[in-house]
Length: 395
Image 1 (tube, rainbow, N blue to C red):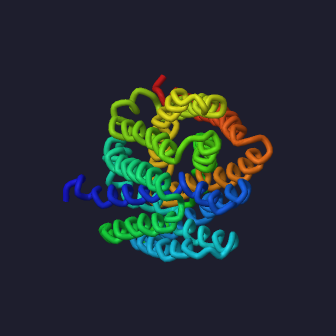
Image 2: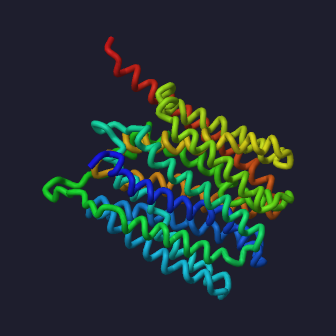
Image 3: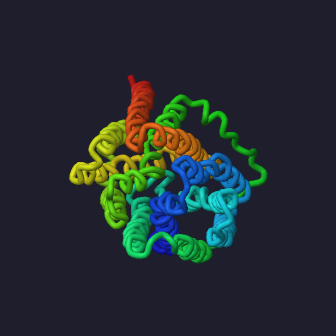
């Protein structure tokens, strides 16, 4: 089978999964707001997704590494999330909603890490990460996100948020169908080989610098993921315009994924980490101080090509380098836990308190500070990697 045909089912999964995310994440806070919930309650409910990322990805990653059954685990997760989404139709109060989101997110929060671990060998050549192949798959996720963030924005502007549960059911159903269409490939697990411990990898200084930079960089994104739609709504932007602003960031993201093999070789991976965090600091400062100036906000959104798309590809490439073979699933899981679990939980809780006391703009000033810290850790990773490269050169 040709490489393109092998990657096609994973492209379909990426498209449907991010189509679900493209509608669910931007508009969940607005649906909760329409239900009359406070900013603190909204931020806590949205943070349930991040809370599940503290335990679910590593649990699924450990299980997939030790069984090789990544596709079967994906099928189970998607089906369970689909059934759980039916609970959104029942208005039984905040505790019920908390439980429904908890079950849903427990099964969806690790789906991309499992998928990317399953296709890792398909996007590599001779064990080396191939940015061009990876971009071909990931761009379908961006396209899926783009379609639903625009369509849902227009729909909710016209008809309100009452059909939010229906959108959830339909998009998760699409994810479930695409997962069941994946080839049921089971990776061989050599029982006679000793299990590989992840602890020696985590003790390496470059890995520690990388994860520290990852944490603060994604923490700065939580303002976008949790509060951006609420912020724009408070400034008087329509739901259609909110969708368009989200869509703009995805359009430039697609541009990066399509052309990234041309740009990535120009800098080292750790140098790209510095660039991404530096640009993120500028993006958040503009969003915090000038969100009411549309052309500046549009410019800030175009930075998403660097602050998310570039950063994500660089992180996946570094994970492929640091966590090969039997460590692959756990490495991807740690990426999700540190990058999107701890950060989302902390950012959602602190952001809710900040926005209640000082206004929504304060969340984005906090994100600016977090980006600067990420830049400092990225510099540490770059300097350490540069030192290792210098030592490896022949005298």
